Length: 307
Image (cartoon, rainbow, N blue to C red; front, side, top):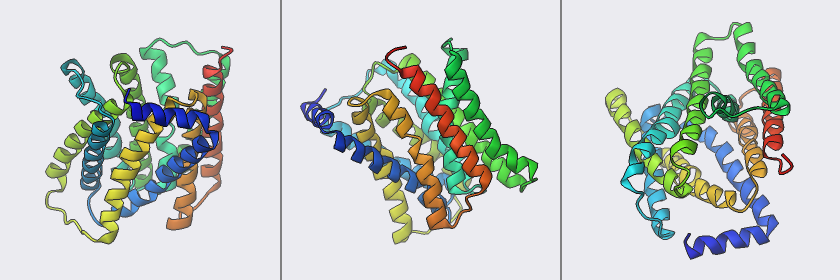
């Protein structure tokens, strides 16, 4: 590990207020990014935006890897990095950005951050993980929250396009969960910064190909706002925030880390309401609370030192 990274980690460990400040900053930025992703659809196609975003993010990540003197991974890992790039970046954000055409930014963030539920369920079948009663309770509560959001729209006979968009984002959450399982199987020996940089580059390449095929004739409007959306989500939300996050993971326990990510959809809802005038309906609020409670129960018990 680079000496600068070690000094940074030690400083974070010795100053708890820095941990709180960084967690709040990262989750607020990630939550706010959802409104920018939604607004970006006014200026370019969803796939084109994602291609620019993660292209910029990948370039920034390689600069960060160079700063920390993290080299190129061995050739044997490249295939696995490509697959994670497809699952975690390409598939997730192709589906999310297309789904955002039909679904509010706040609700989209909730649906995508149901990912821990799917990761746990996939781990049962693929990694043969065993769940104990409190974990089953937590997952059940989380799934009920998801069904509260999706089921309400179905019961109220919402616009078919809205339900279609919601299902795309749920599939994206499942793909993200599958990428976590794949990472545990084949890439956990690598630096997390290294994995993030290379998978993002491979994912950006795949998104770029899709964008060229499907949106090559669609107009792109470049102005101060659209450039800001690309740079904020690419440099800050995709590259710098993940870099700080992975450094934080080395300095804090996994319980704190996992539960902290639940702030992202909360901030996503808040910014969607404040900036985009998105409604905070009863089913969204109840569903969000159930998902947050369910994932918290499952992860706190699972990671408890006494267990």
